[in-house]
Image (tube, rainbow, N blue to C red):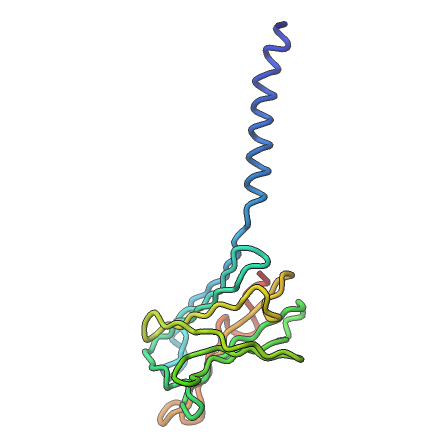
Length: 182
């Protein structure tokens, strides 16, 4: 073997290893996440302290989560209850909501139903890890979670006697911002 060939082999091996690394790491699904904390700036139990959305591939489910400063029971979101939680979805990139998810108490269970032009989702289970958090997973096959990406924001509304007698509302991220697109 010539000395030129001997010097070239380690360089070729290093180039092959680097190429394999780049191919493997770019082929892995990239995760996309948006999260935000929010100020304690709204009266009522549904003042959000944090919110987030996460999906680990373009066609993956979208995991959404909110946390509030106050603790609240599921009945707050009943039809006659004082609270509402919404998620607004922009699927076309114009920062105008195309779909709206509403979290509500239905038959004793918290669910989110997403509606939009010609679309109404099946009720999606809402999980409560504690009395100030709510989490929901939007399927990757949902019209509100397309492969092309989705932007979203959360809104809570609370109406009760006292400071919220006229209604208290909070958005995360604060208007006019959106999370995403992811």
